[in-house]
Every structure is written in structure tokens, then in C-alpha cells.
Image 1: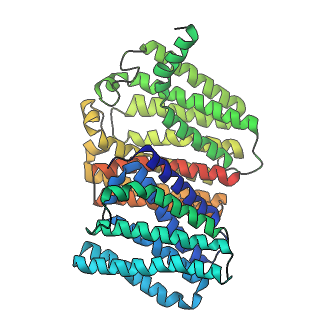
Image 2 (image 1 turned 60 degrees about the vertical axis):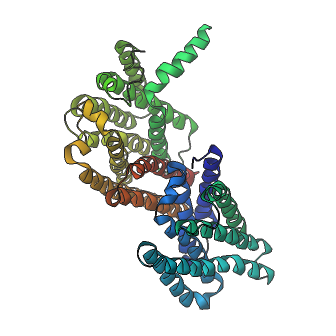
Image 3 (image 1 turned 120 degrees about the vertical axis):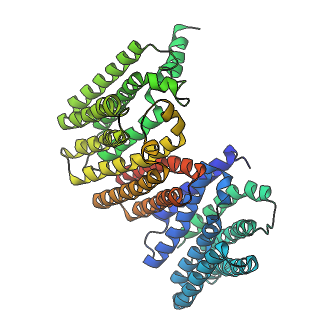
Length: 200
Length: 291
């Protein structure tokens, strides 16, 4: 599918917003959280730039599943390390094993298992990014605006699932529809994260 | 058409393509970044404008002189056939005169700003026109090393102007450009291998084959990243920018390894474009970090 100028502009804005977040938005946090968020937003930056340069065809790469997994799992791990310190080790083990299993089953192994692993890991990470910031904001642990991270989590969860299931050959929506909405979805997601992290 | 309109039309269609605006702009950015990297209270608008103006003229001059010298092979290669010099829109004498005027103005202006700065700008121009284009380009594929040295001179010149001397950080910044240039030019020579072959210009792919060229690109990308990392860390770049540079570097290395182990025309083109973005991004970060 041909990438329109508007798609390129949206992706460039995404890359710039994510760059701002890496440079300014996560300063002052714990090292573990900074590392996790840098990976998440870094993958977003590189992915947006590669889409601008190479077009939507870059999504045909087998690495897309890995990239679309790394963003939510890194964000989820970063949030857990900041706000659920006691769960960091078990959650970290789950995330690392889950991500490795996704990579392995993507390249070798039964397709059904690949889809199940993908759904479980994405689901857990997506739920964490979506629910944790909203709960924290509602309980007053963080400022109310931090709930924007949860909204971003919901959006990235949708994008990640759409892409991942497209890559595993079981698309939820048609390829054209997914590609049409993807640049805008990525920008909205990044904007929500940047807005939310301002309230940390 | 009035004289003014005619002059603007000529400037746009005949002369502007002679300076390769994007390449000149990128090299100019490295020069400004080199200057800003000196960090001392150097935000002197007059000097900054002098640096930008002199570098623009010198880089443009050397580019025009290269086009004048290479007009015969440019006429053979499909990619360059439409250049004003090879298409016959501008006479060789006019091109030579323009190149010399721009070069003399650029180097002369640079020398009046600072002797060391002027000398480095002169070396850049000399290496590019005489050593790279006139002497080595048609003889050996290793000419790109000297093309790389000339491409590294703007950043070294900028830092030397800001600092008043050459230090190891300036050399490391220059090294990052020298090692970055193969990533850029070798992917280009792979894409246009047939063009270079038709013009009998030796390239890495035609001399050593594609696998060796790809391995060279991967190694040079790693070295460029290491040199850039060492330089910006020593400059004292803020952690936020270092993180972003690490992200962009990871993308560069990923693509370099991708063309080594899963080569394709598309990834090759992607690396060519991404390498430019990487360098531009790194330079902008150096400037923004100071501001």
C-alpha cells in the first residue's frame, strides 16, 4: 500500500514526540524505569523512521512482531518497576520469558502456539499499561493526568494486537484498514504517553 | 520573461543542482555542530554566520569543481546524466570559473576568520577535489577513504574554530564522519553498481564483491557509532540526548547487520537514507545540547 504524505507527517511527528520523551520526559526517574522507557520509545522512534523511509512494506519484516511486542512489554516493565516494586522480579521474569517465547515461536514452532503466546504476553503487558496508571491516578497515588498513560496503553495495545495478528496470518481487520489508521494511532498513542508522563 | 525572472530561473535550474544542496547542507550542519561542541561561551552570531557562510561557499565550490572534473563520467551514468554539467546546459569553463570563485571566496573568508580554521577548510577542499576526485576516484575504490577525510574536515574545522586548537574530541568527531561515509557511499555504490561499472569507476562492490562490501559497511557503522559515542560523551552531552543517540545508533547498527545477514535492495536503500538521518540527528543533538 502506498504511503501518503499525511502518513509520513504523522509518523515524523510520532518520532519527534517520542524523541522528546527519551530526551526530556523520563529524566529523573529510576535507572530501571529509564532503561525500559528508552527501549519502548526508542523502538517507536526507529520504527516510525523506517516506515517513513521504506514505506508500509517494512511491516512485512518478521521483526515487526518483535518490535510491536517490545514497546508494550518495556513500558509495562517500566511502570511495574516504578509503582509495584515488589512484583518487579516475577513480572520481569514473565516478560523476558514471554518475549523470548514470542521470538522463538515466531521463527520456529507451531503457529497456534505462537498466537496463544502472543495474546497472553500482549494481553498482560497491555492490561498493565492500561489499568495501572488509571488505578494509580484514581487512588491519588499520582496526579490525575497520569491516567493519560493508561489511555496511551490502551491505544498501543490495540495497535500492537492489530499488527501482531496481521503478522501471524489471522488479521482482526483488513491490511488496508490497519495501515490507514496506524500512523494516526501511533501519534495519538505517543501523545497520550508524553502527556501522561508529564504528571509523574 | 524579465531579466530578474530569467536570473532566478537559471539559478534554480542550472546552478543550484551544481552544489548538491542536501549534501552541502548536511556537511554544513556538521561544521556548525563542531563549532557548537566547543561549548565555551562561543555563541557569537558574527562568527557563527562567518562559519556558516565560509563553509557553505567552500563546500559548494568543491562540489562544483568535482562536477566540472567528472562531467565526462557523469554523462555516462544514468543517475547523473541530467546534471547541468553533463547535459551541456553549462559550459565546462563556466563551471570551472564558478567552482574556483566559490572555493577562493570560501577558503579566503575562512582564513580571515581564523588561520587554523581556514587551513582545515582548505585541506578539506584540497582532499576532495585534488586527492579524491582528480587523483584517486578513477584509480582505486579506496578513494572513498580520502573522500571521507575531506567530508570530516567541516566538523573538525568548526570545533577548531570554537576551541582555537585541534583536540582529540575534534579528531573523534571527524573519525565518526570518516567511518560514517562508507556506510553512506558504499550502499550508494551498491545501488548504482551498473552505472559505476559503465563509467569504469572502481567501487568496493566491483572490486571486492557484495559480501565484503556489506561486511565493510557493518564494521564502519560500528566504528562510526563508537567514535561518535566517545566524542559526545566526552563533550559532556546531557543524558537525555545520549539516550536518544543510543536509540538512533541501535537503528543504524540493526540496519547494517540486516544488510550483512539478510541483504536486499530495500534494506540497502533504507540504510543509505537512515545513515543520513543518523548523522543529521547526531549533529542537531550536539547543537541543541549547547542551546
